[in-house]
Image (cartoon, rainbow, N blue to C red; front, top):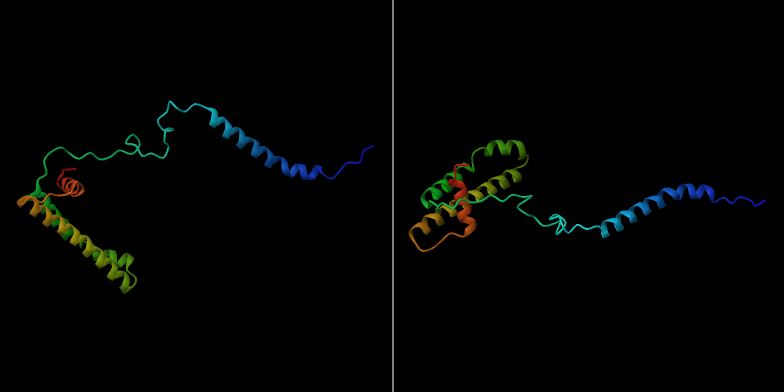
Length: 143
């Protein structure tokens, strides 16, 4: 009679790990040999396409620079609405309140700058960049 070795308890602990590795290997090779060429998602799974992430289309209507500059001026003034509520909720320290004010002032200055640039482009040959034009179009749209 051959004596039993004490391998049996160790094998019981290793079997689930071996089974898991075999399943992963089978999945890996199964996906590797399957044909995904017919699907668009597998061509480049990280590519952002309009099929999954729709891009807002800007209207083909001409940009009304006067209305856009007026709306940008309004936006620069409405930035400061609700600043006290924001300070109450977030601003526990004076440094935080100053940062909130500085951020709002910076945003307001950017809107004013866009409004001024729209007025200047209306009266001169200076034109707006495409992103600036799109922002003004979105401001003046009814949506």
